Length: 377
Image (tube, rainbow, N blue to C red):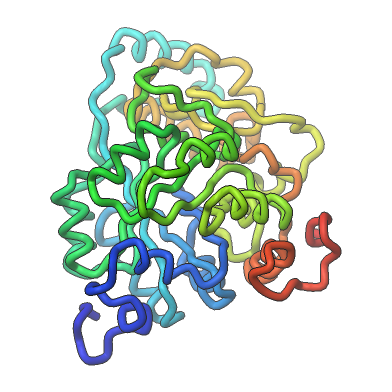
């Protein structure tokens, strides 16, 4: 269904392109919870629909999917709800400047691959189908398109907005937020270092500081512009949601909080690991992908601290290894992405988690769960 048709969906009628970009984006947030895009399986149409029906804004993850696969998931969400939802796209970087480091690192991984009976993949650079995904989203837009690992050009932002989408850019520092606002994005998604999975920074080096904790980052964004700020970074409790709202965010983007929900497509062993007492902490590591990402500290993280800055090359090379580990139940070799608050994740339905998170924010009725305690798993 194309925007502008007589039977356009309610989000488009309520937030027309003629309205200012920021007010259009803020108007899509019915309750201050965003169900984060989680690439690699956790984000499913079922999870996005459940979020939407509970009043939250859910995101599909276009990362690692071919454009046709993204289109299929968009169609599945539209079949399940008339409410707004978003799609997240990875912005491609540049090939690694450490090819020798990649070769040495893959040599170090050979014993792991041999143990699992697989070969490593090709350490190749790719752009994750960026241009084709943009073309598809401009032709058949979602309510929101968000970007991670960089900022799209002003021309891309404008084209998406003219098609009817609001644009959000993941940022990890005030400098990135300034770039996103200058490009015309309707809002930055401020990602604190507490967040699970990949850091969304624009570069994979030390160009800008990117280790801000969430509240500190939100404070740096005061006055960044007339934009709607989303807040991402281990928001697991109603009190934490209330805190980021008090610091100027219009909503919290939560991934780990929904990871164990039945609507999540995450591997069952990964879901179980978040509740497994043997994992006492998380760490930011390049071991699995060549890009900084927060994961539970398992054997693979401990044994491979020296991965080079090489994304997606290392990610492509380790994909067969990670897939074999998951299929064989080798949890110590799986990439167990998790935010700092992972122990508070629940296996309750996504709609119940939305209700509970909002119970202390003054933004909606609670689920009857006592304030300050997570839903019972």
